[in-house]
Image (tube, rainbow, N blue to C red; front, side):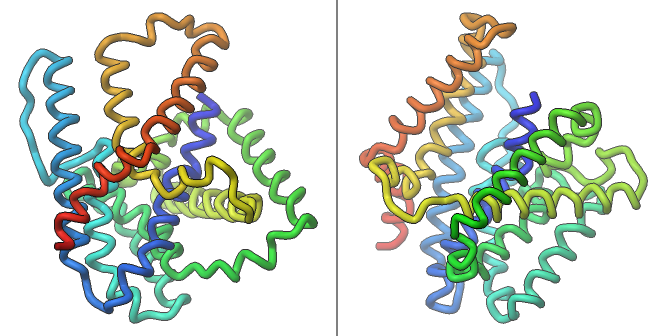
Length: 294
C-alpha cells in the first residue's frame, strides 16, 4: 500500500496540472468554447454509462443512474467542464491573485459538508489550485532549473517523501481520504486546525514532487513520447479494464503474498498503456470533440 499512497500524493495533482497547462489554448478566444464543453460532456456521459452498465452487470442488479453525481473515474471529465467554465475569471487575474484565490477555495471550501460527489464538487474544489497553477505555468519557469546540478536534490526529495510514506503508514492510512479528495474535512475525523495543516502539508508535498518531476523530465523525445499526447484514451479504457478484472475475479490467478501480483500488474499496466495509446483508439476517444467542432 505504501507505493499506492506515494503515487496518490502527486499523480492526480500532476494530471490536473497538465490539464491546466494545455487549457491556455482554450482561452485563446477569450470566452468559453461551447464545442469543447460539449465534447467533454458527451465523452463523460458515454464513459459514465458504460461503467454503470458494467457495474450493474457484475453486481447482478440495476442501480440508480445519476448523471450529475460522480465519484469514480469519470469525475475528471465533469470537473474539466466546470474548470473551463470558471477559467475566464482566473484569466483576468494575475498569477499571484489567481493562485491565492484558488488556494483559498481549495483550502477553505472543503469545510462545507455539502461538498461531495454531486458535480464532483469536492474534487473540483480541492484540485482547483493545481489546474490554475498549470494555466499560469510557463515553461521558461522550469527551464532554468533543468540542469544537472538540480537533478540530485530533486531525486533526494522524491526519496525522502518515499521514506516518509513507508515509515508513517498508520498516519497516512488514517488520513488517506485527503489524497482521494472526494469528501469534505469531516471525513478526516480531526480538528479544524489539524485539517488545515494536513491540507496545506499535502498541497506543499504534492507541489514539491510535481516540481521535481518537471525538473527530471527529459527535453528530448523518445520513441514512446507520443504516448504523452494520447493519455485521454488510456485514462478512459484503463478503468474499464479494471472493472472487468474485478468483476471476473482475475486477480485470483496471482498470489498476493508474492512479487507475482506486482509483476503481473506492472506488465498488464504497460500493455494497457501501449495498447490504448494507439492512434485509432485515441481518435475514437477524441471523436466527440471533432463532432462538436463542426
